[in-house]
Length: 254
Image 1 (spheres, rainbow, N blue to C red):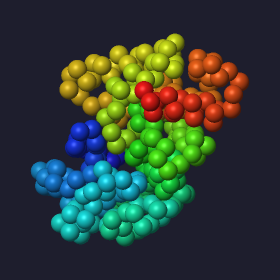
Image 2 (spheres, rainbow, N blue to C red; image 1 turned 180 degrees about the vertical axis):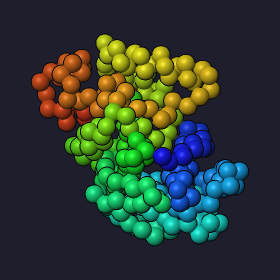
Image 3 (cartoon, rainbow, N blue to C red; image 1 turned 90 degrees about the vertical axis):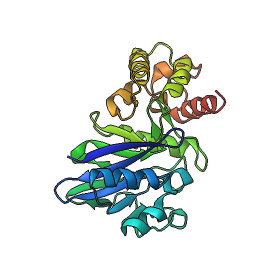
Image 4 (cartoon, rainbow, N blue to C red; image 1 turned 120 degrees about the vertical axis):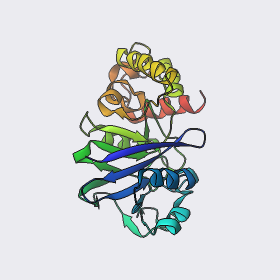
């Protein structure tokens, strides 16, 4: 299985160093900055061979060129958005696969947060790198997409196996939970996640990765088609896209 190391940077970003042990290939997922990544790779004696970008925002690609200049790595990113990924060598699109050494990822086009966002699913390692499309108990803001696009994207990710670990790009879980309980107050899975996250954060530990099974049960943005959530916000019987849009609207001003 992949050896995945989490590097916290800036105020709440996560960068991931991902090593495929059979080949020694090492990918950096969404490097906001270069320095901490190069330092950690040096400490581990890992040679960086790839960068995997999910989308173009500066806190996901800001370290691309410095890392590439230092290591000669190959930069892989969304072919749906080719002009906004610094130094991109390989474009991947929805349905493509991309191999990191002997481990294969499947690429999902998941627009909504941005128009070109993608995610990488490493099936054999139960690992999903979803950038800012899905967070633990949350989802990304709709900067460039529509509620319909984001709901479709989230449904695709929700359909992956429940044991999938969600390696999202930010430590937002506590604030996401504070909002989620306002729209889904009777959800016991959410309340359990609330207790678990409080304990993790009190111990100085990250709340990420989470398990997709937990998100399926507790994340309101994955539950827009759940009748009990629609009823809780006064939208019983409404189209899930409308329910999702209302929940996202409430979160934007929370």
